[in-house]
Image (cartoon, helix red, strand yellow):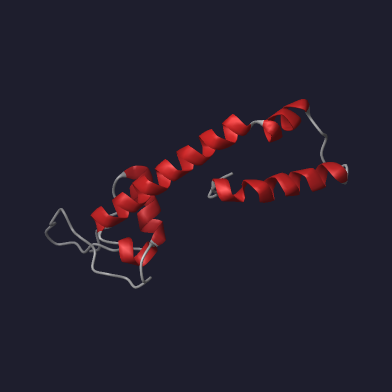
Length: 110
């Protein structure tokens, strides 16, 4: 699931099992197998923990760690590239997500 962690997995299992019990969705053999797959759960947990660690490291590099992991207060962002003319605009978490996905979140204002 998008924007979820391994800690959300029991909740998703409960939601899907409830939908199956209400006959809203069919019980498929793949679902029964996946629910019992402990190795898969461990693998997803390790991958999630690795991604979380990487995100925290990037937040530190960008100077937004306090905003997301610490006190919650916005701090002055580190600007590795000094550009002439424009201003760097930050949109909080959207900027952070965008940088993780695309590598840059600078917007030039004229």
